[in-house]
Every structure is written in C-alpha cells, then in structure tokens.
Image (cartoon, rainbow, N blue to C red; front, side, top):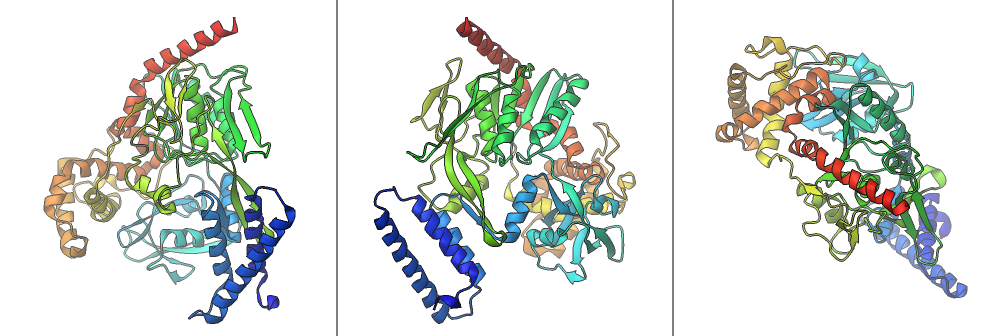
Length: 549
C-alpha cells in the first residue's frame, strides 16, 4: 500500500511527525514512539480514504502542501510551509533582489497596469511607462489574470527573455517589447530626502533584508552632507525581516551596552539570548520613529528598543504585534518551512507578540489592516513596564506609539473613483490627450529631474476636463455604481490625487512622496515632535551618566 504514495507525501508526513514530536514534553521515549506510530497509521488511513473515494482526481502535491500548512496553522499564524517555487522567491527577496523586469504593477480598471518601472532596470530600458496595461505575456492573453499571476510570469531565470504586450494610452495599436530578465534590487529604503529645516527623512519600508544596515548608513551619510540635524525614521508598513539587520539598525542609535532585545525559546530548551548595542559612537542627532499597523517584527524590535531607552519618540499608530521568532528549515526537494522557535522581548521586558488565541488566522493577519490599522484599541495594561526615564509602556500588543496620530484615510467611494475613472483620466493626461493640459505629456519616467513644489499644478480647466471625463466614464460603466454626486463630493480630494498620480508617472513614487509630504499628517506631527524627542533623549543620557557615576 505504501508504494502507491509519492515522495511528497512522506516528506509531508515526516514534517507532521517532527513538529508534533517537538511539542511533546520529553518523558517516556516508548510512549512518544507509540503515539507517533499511531499518528502515522491514522494519517496513512485518512489519505487512503481520500484518495480512493473523493469525487475528483487528486493532486497529491497540493493535498499534502495544504495538510502541512493547516498543521502549522494550528501552532501559530506565522509558521508557514513553502513550496519549492515560493521558498526560492522568499530566499531571493531576503537577499534584496529578484530576477525579473523591475517594475511596480497594480490592478486598476479592468486589468493590471505598470505603475512605475524602477530606475536602471529592464522595464525602464524597454520603455515601459505608467499606465501601460499588460494584455499579453509571451503571446498569451492576461485577461482575468491576477496581479500575482502576472508578476510570477514576468519573473524568471536570470538572462531569459519575456515578451510583454501592453495597451498604451498614446498608441492606437498594442505595443510589444522583448525584455531580458535581470537581477532587480529590492532596497529596504524607498525614500530619502531633506524635509526642510534640517529634518532628514528616511522611509525604511520594504523590509529588513541583507543590505538594510548598509543602506541606512549610506542614507544617513548622504543626508548629513545635505545639512541634516534631525531624523525621521519611517517604519510604517515595514513587515520585518532579518533579526541581525534589526539589531544593527537599532545599534546605530543606542549607547554601548544598552540592551536591544532578548529572545526566549521553549521552557527548558535553554534558548535564551540577549543582544546589546556595540556601537561606540551612536548617531547623536534627535530622532523620531514612525510606525503603524503594518510595522511588524524587525520594525517593532527597532521601535521598541528606541522607545524603552527613551532615545526618541514613537509617532503614528500601534504596530502589528508580531514578536515570534521564525527559524527557516529547508526541506528535501527544494521546499521549506518557517517554524516559530522563540519570542522577542524589548529591553524593558515587554512581549511584542499580541494574542492570537481567539479568532481565525484571517482575522489575526488581515482584519486589522482592513480596519485601517486599528490595532490595540485599548492598552494591554497586564504587561506594564517602564522606560529608562520611568515612562510607563505596555507589552503584549505590539508597540504603542507615544503620540498616536490617525492618517488621512481613503473611503470606499474614493478608492473606487481612484482605481477606475480617475486613473484612466491620468493615463490620458500624461499621454497628452487632455486639451486643457498639453504640457503634461510625458513619454516615460525621468529619475534625474528634481521638480519644484509647484510642478503639475492641477488647474480649474484640468478639473473641468476631469469632471467631463468622469461623466462619460460613469455613463459607460454603470456597473461600478458611481454617481456624479459622489464625484462632486470628492472633487478637491480628486485634485490632490490627480497630482499624486501625475508625479508618479513623470518622476516616480519617491519624488511624489517628497513633494506631497505636506498631506501626510502623521509625518507633519512627527516633525513637530522633534524638539520634545530631543529633550527626552537628553534626559535619558543624563540619567545614564548619573547611574554610571
């Protein structure tokens, strides 16, 4: 009977047994073996019943992968199984690059579109631009494809070619280009600039990869050369990554010997470790750290260390609350899994991880984000701790910011307008097809030009054209449920959004964020809190000197 089952099945079963055994308190070896044998037989029997009686033919690999994934989900929401392809992609992205064409793509009206080709990538060299709708890949229609499926098909082996056909607003006929895939960098830092009055801004938003610490050092050096006297470190939306990179980032701001974090494993395992700052000369400039519900894991380690040592204020929304350590285990055949082996604690002893025992994994992972980062509505007062200067902080639910600031949110109507009619208007605008704005026409993205703060001003004649466009668009797409009353209610919001999209089209996301920073209420509050953050850090330094004496 056993010979009927593919190798993948036994790999999966072995994982089940290994993980299950790891959860058993080591008592009687014979009892463990008996339990494992019983589990083995029950699993074999269940799979035989399914194989012989299910209404459809089965894909063993998918069935086994699903079984492993569900088993890991019973442990915690962050232990995961990866197929060979998914495991390869994860490890590649951790190395700060992947093989592909190098472009941001997003689903918009009736398709998936190029939003921004990255600088010095195959996509940019091939002339792909904002608003290009991807309609074919290697001659195959992409109608009905998700953005994930399109992304997977654009990526591939280094040096291989992919043929991409796009519909372009400025062209009557589809445009087809052949692109050779190359290594595309995935830097952790997405934006770096001076926000005025010597305030340096660094958006560390794309995870903690193998190059994160080096990127941050380079960014700080560059900003100092431009006159930076204080720093905003933006960790909003940063999902985390390598532990060693989080330690190196925190180390840049702390004094030698200060605790960065501790890690504690299963009771009795002896898995306890503490990391302390080793930098002899920490960055002396005042700093404010920004977080939100998308800031997780490594981001929370950095924010927690800075908060506990009163090195700077934390501004924004409560972080995600992911304080579990995952160890990566490669498996036979190229697959792999990440298994929780320990928990993170901040310098004051706070547990970062929030409770996941109630509710589904979906609610834990996604519902918070869908509610606009509405995390930790009440402070988890069961874990009260104190910072170096005696301020009260709380554990067990992520990092609670010192100053909580709600962002400007986009409601459902605005989101529908933005991703449908407004987006199509900007496509036409940047293609030179809006008579009231002939100077907006661009044939591609320009990464070298540094536009002024008044560039791409959206005038009343342009907005008149936008309103007429929306009137025609709504008439042709009644299924969207939009009305002109809704368009008029969000008219001034649309004026700002059109400019944002135009700036992305012409100069990229980094430039757009720099020029539109005054609309970021969380960032503006972070800048306003720099003097208070500097005073807090100085008070902590004085207390440290007194203690040493």
